[in-house]
Image 1 (cartoon, rainbow, N blue to C red):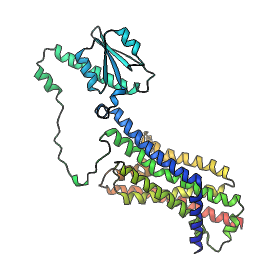
Image 2 (image 1 turned 30 degrees about the vertical axis):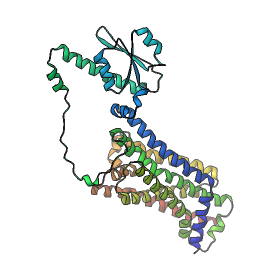
Image 3 (image 1 turned 45 degrees about the horizontal axis):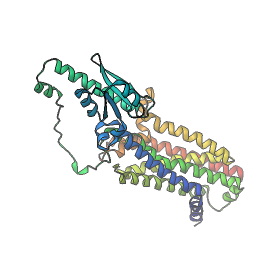
Image 4 (image 1 turned 90 degrees about the vertical axis):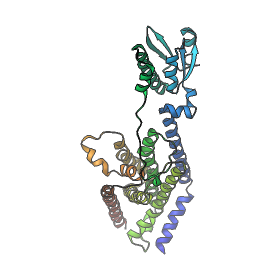
Length: 374
């Protein structure tokens, strides 16, 4: 009963803290913002999606003395074409009416672009593709090849795909390879770990707050073992963070991002969350003030961010064989498909052992601190 009372007291402290509740709202905004960013960047990276979603209106290109073949190449890349009669009038509209102007000079394609535009990077890729297509088409025609031969050379390779396990298919919000890469390769792992960053900070605030209020020694004198006191302190924070992670996963599913193998994913999150809570508990033992604790937890979470996410984007050299044991990469493998490689279960073992060791180290330190203070 005393453990239940302590746990309920900690839970009430969490829900009565306006900062924590505000941070929950901030996380919702982050999840929705990250999803929106993935959608926008995916559309910007795909000419067909750009055309379908009407985004080509932002990518306006001026063409001087419009060459039909050149104009066709630009439109194939999802660019909105505006024709000008002369180069002077086109340059007057550069930056305001159009983001770039394209014209032929001496048989070569010339491009003048407004590099200050935020769309310049996307525009440059489209222009490069259009220019390459125009040059290849021009060479085909100058070679004297029959039109049917040219069409045969342009005909893309068609693969006959036999669908297997179609019953396990779940529709994706956006059928784009870039969307899949950024969503499953970064956003999904980031979203599910975000609540545990807050959870470690809540544990730190709880214990350090007891020290600052001079009630830590009183807490240790309660007829409860150190283990029960620790459980009473950490269970609300762990449960609060874990439930948030599941809610954010559910939100992504509602937004059209299928998440597979949810039970195993939840188990991995719970194990990894234990490590975050252990770090927060360990720091709270070392720190005597909230200021010290906040500084220490910031440094610890910085290293956690580096370990969890940087290997997803960088070549780690000699450490590459160890990357498969990182929880973020395991989450990518678990959540992105319905079928599991048994090796993934084995890859989870080091993370589980590491999390348990961190938590046990924090428990031992807490007990030692209690003995010293009493």
